Image (cartoon, rainbow, N blue to C red; front, side, top):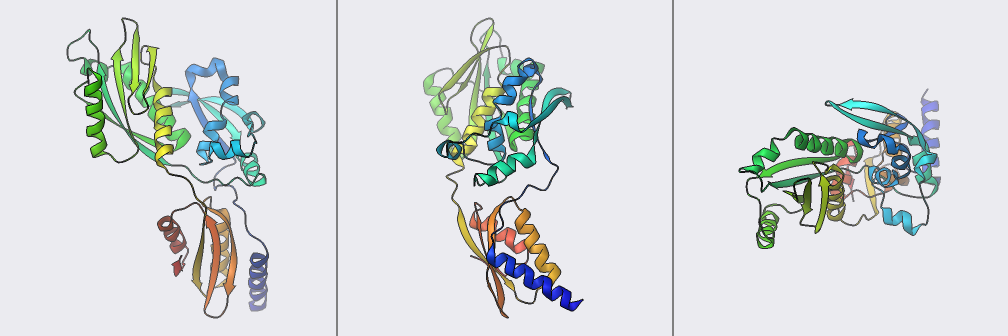
Length: 313
């Protein structure tokens, strides 16, 4: 038994000294699920074909990186099927993509990917010149609340982005007031926040203004979820900073058991945060593993410490 374990240990070390493990599939089922508003069911083909951006964001892949490499994901090649799902009394289209083939595409094209997560604070100011105390009239409106719930649910399901809404009592009536409000919010919030101004454009239309990006949309009734989601994703992506691949060295004690070593290697090869790794040095004092990741140093240190690393630099 001891001889067998020793042979296994030597085989593992030799293998890792010779090769680097590429990023493998995330630990879950073999399907990537994306969700779309039920209202777009009659445009399902267009929805599928335009899913590339959402798939890339789901994996934290830079769209510019894809453009620079002059390649396309082509979502229809990975699409499996769709069905109607009900969440919190809302009907959504569940799009099912082949997770393995998408991740194989990333690996074959040497595209680094990892989990994309975020949280955005959404300040909402509402106004309706046809009613007194109109912000209450709008905020309590069932259709308005359903649209917010829809946006929040789609954001969490598709992008792992949590939207936190806060309603403002006063509505800025002119540009000076808008700029003053943005400055005030900027003092309280550092990153990942946006302001949405809801106003009646005319008797039949509503306007949705996002002062930070200087964008405005005119829609019938409360149809703003797609605009809100685009602004939230852009805000988080913008403040996320440029992703930089980093090289780390993690040191483990030398007297690890074979089972402990196998567990560490398996965790590293399965992790979506580790691009590749190898044994840099192994002797009677320690085992040093070199790995590449997009994690920040503190996050990388936390992850490797959970595996038993003595230090990570």
